[in-house]
Image: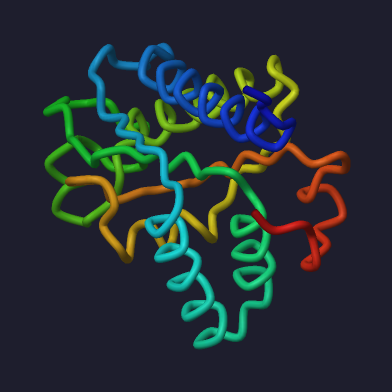
Length: 181
């Protein structure tokens, strides 16, 4: 059997994606409560998300959604990561800008612990990609499409991280004519 470099690159990207999800899950939590959720999209699921990105970009005249969708199409897979909005019932925290969790919930705001934990989880995930020399980029645009598609149960704040293994990073100069898989 001959395994081509393209097969190896795809397999490596999927292995690193698994490690990234594990790193996001095990990342330190500011409150010790886990509100992080993650998944990996490939194939038709990834295409469904990029179709929604293009719809959002076209409707809102936001060209970067279209560019980012092209980058995802040229990527092996996409890690979707988000957090559940969960108030912790604190009487006097104020980290979110409100006096307590009840006021925060009434205003429809997000808990600062949840959002901070998401940032830490994303940092842990992309450090795995970097350690494995896997090209990646954190994308708000794909996260907005993931939210619209409700990819993860109960998640209200999303980001996404595509993985690519081309000889030149497709995320560097953001060339929309990058190689497609």
